[in-house]
Structures are given as C-alpha cells and as structure tokens.
Image (cartoon, rainbow over all chains, first blue to last red; front, side, top):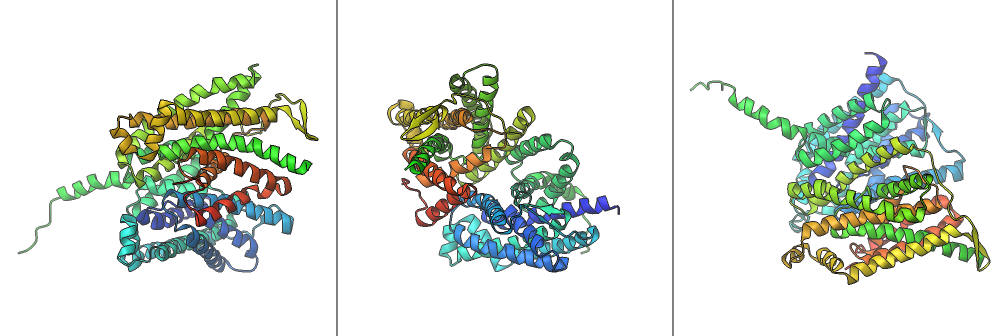
Length: 289
Length: 287
C-alpha cells in the first residue's frame, strides 16, 4: 500500500470509531451528544503533552483514560438534564474547553500551540485498526448485557426505567464514559498526524457534527449503519474538502437535512428491505424430512 | 467611576442586542420547539446585507427596514417546507426537538458557506456615526448610543406587540399549550411558522445593529447563537420577559468580565449557565 492509501484508511477508521462511539451512547438513549470533539481534543492534547515520553499504544490508553474521566465529570453534572439541554451543554463544552485551554496555554506556558511528535503511518494504522476491533467487540457485548438493556429502557421511557429500578444517571454516565474512552484513544493516535496543534485545531466542533451525520445518514439502529455512513463521508471529505471547502460544507449541510427528512432509518434502512425481499425470493433449500 | 460607567454603557449596548437575539430564539424554541442553531447565521446575513447596502450608499438605519422582510420570508418558507415535513415524519414530541436541532445545524452549514463564497472570510466593516459624545466624563462613539436606543426600543416594542396585539395573544396561547390553542381556533401551523419567521426577522435586525458598531465576519454567527441559547435558558424557556432580562444580565456580566480579562468572557457565560442548570433548571422566570 502507498502511504497515501494508509493515511486514507486511518482517517476512515477514525471516523468509523467516532461514529460508532457516538452511536453506542446516543442511539439507544436518545440523548444527542455533541461532546465528541471535546473527547477527541482531550486525546489530542494528551499526545501533545506526553508524546515524547510514551509509545503510541500507551498514549492511546492515556488519552482514553483522560477522556473517560472528563466524560464522568461532565456526565455526572449534565446527564441529569433532559433532551435538548444536554445537547446544548455538550456543544458548549467544546467551546468552553477550547477557550480554557487557549487561555491557560497563553497565561502559563506562553505558547499558542504545541509541536507533536510524529509516528510511522503504518503504526498509526494498526493501532487504529486494533482499537476499532475492540470497540466493535465492546458494542456487541454491551448490547446483550444488562447495561445495554438498561440503556434501551431509558430510551423507551426514562421514568418507567427509573421505576423498575434502573439507576438511570449511573447507567448513562457509564456508557457516556465508555464511548468517550474510544474517542480519546483515537484522538491520541491521530494527533501524531498533525505536526502542530493549537486549541482551535484540537477542539474543532466539526468532530462533533461529523459522527452524528455519519450515523444518521447510515442508520442509527444497527452497527453497520454508522460504519457505512462513516466510510461514505470520510471518502467524500478526503476527495472534496481540499479542492472545494465551501462547496463541501454546503453539500454536507444539504445531505444532513435531506437524510433527516427523507431517510429516517438511514441508507441501511433503504437498502435492507429490498435485500431481505430478494433473499426471501431465493429458492429455499429443501429440508430433508 | 469612569470604569463603572464604561462597563455599564458597554453592558447596556451588548445587552440590548443580546435581548433582541434571544427574544428571536425564544420565539423559535419556546413556541415552535425548534432550537435553531442557524440563528446566528441570520444575524450574520443581516449584518452583511447592511454592509453591502452601505457600500451602495444606503444609510444603515434604512437597512433595518430593507433587510428584515426578506429574512422574515426565508424563515417563514423554511418552516413551511423543512420543519413542517419533519413534524409529519416524527409526529412531534422529543424526536421532533432533537431532529429539528440537527436540521438547523445543516441549514447553518449551508448559509454560512454560501456567505463565505460571497463575502469571503476576512473581517469587514464600514464607518457610521463615529463622532464622539461625552456622558458623565467618559467618551462614547455616537453609533454605540444610537444602537443602544434602537435595541431598547425594538425590545420593548416587540414585548408590547406580544402582550397587546391579537397575533401576539395567539402566539402566547400556542406557547402555553399548542393543542388547546388549536382547539380554540388558533391556526397553529401558521402561528408556528410565524414564530420561526419572527425569530429570523429579529436576528436580522440584531445583525444590522451589530454591523453599525463592530467589525463583522462570515463565521461570527455561532458565537451569537451560543449567547442566545444561554440567555434563553437563563431567562426561562418561552418567557419573553425572561429573555429580555437575561439579555441585559448577560450583557452586563460580559461587559464586566471583558473589561478585565476579555478571553474569559465565554467561560464566564458557561459558568453562569452551569450554575443555573444545576440550581434552577427552569430559568429565572420559567414556569
């Protein structure tokens, strides 16, 4: 593989991780989180600070743990808020962290940004691939566990879930933290791709919106949906954004509106029924009697 | 004393504009249940239309009357197409609110990037009433005083429109209980679209005022959206007096913090909202 292909694949895997992490918390509970960029940025800054001290896998672990802790604090405060208030707060969190980090850097270290140690493209790719496999395994396991069922119950009716003995806040915070771990770890690995980061690059709210769009476009009800959405948009971004940045964002916005209005179950919802019909029409294998 | 006066006047100017912006968002979120994240983009469009008109020799004060109607119309059509379709798709309720917000994010990207293509990304401005006036020993530019007067007048005028006129009454009825209002003969879909359109109109007016006193750029919308959201939550959802009051409170706090440590202004706003959400989640004047 050429080094361009490896970079492209790493970035596709990154978006798959972000979209799946968003989906594993927001789809069952119905709480729309726009905090992905905050966790991603926390991961990036972990590498910016510790990049010279630790090897990449340990950096990812550190980034994941720091994001996880951030999610626990934020979640404990804000996950008592219902619906749109939660969304507003998570969105504000990204802006807040950006302002705070920028202020602290200028005040205490007198720099605007930091240089990041670079890593071999192949190493980044393999680390991201392993992270993705672990994430998918976690999603499958959690969906069948007590935690997963509790989350679905919260999504159906939070009051009813609380009445039958689900500790709703604890369950939500736990899942929020798990999903943040993957995002932080991805941020820590991908940070090595930029040689220089500042708060504006690290805490970019596009990393909050992209996963939401990818998951909704692909279909939030399955694990395949967000993956499909992430592949489509990561590829689109790679090919369009350098040549026509404004046009790309306009297309992005229109698809976002269109997907919500006309594709309530995503492209997977569009593709699945005809495929199922086709499978049903196939001649069935005779069962020996 | 001069420090105090500087902060006070600065706070009243920003507060007046914040109040207009927030009353607009309050119409869209409090009544029509759409947390319109593209609100700030309407402000930006209002500001840039004024800039373009002023380059063509139109007085910015006249722009108040020129930019408002098209933005009102765009808001009305947007609600009649996208949001009405969403109502039928989701059947209202929590799913509507979440998706309505996501749609407004999409609209935000579209408006912002069209504006970027037309007006570019560099900060721009024009000169308007830059003579200085002296108030109590401090010197202020005349344009800031004019903006403050207009902002306060628009806020009070809009409040009177809501509390006195027949349309205002039907809007308030729809805010309290849309189903009951519909049963009482309020044309609910039209009122919702009207509220969204009024929100766009107020955003446009705020944009015109902002362009008179500040440099403007095409990416400024989001920061005003965030402020409007904070004020609406601060004042209480759907409460117009709450937005009015919250706007001025935030303006004064912002002015005071900005005077000593400008980079922490946004942080101060978030602290206010964080404390509020934990102590009194329904807002200052919320029911």
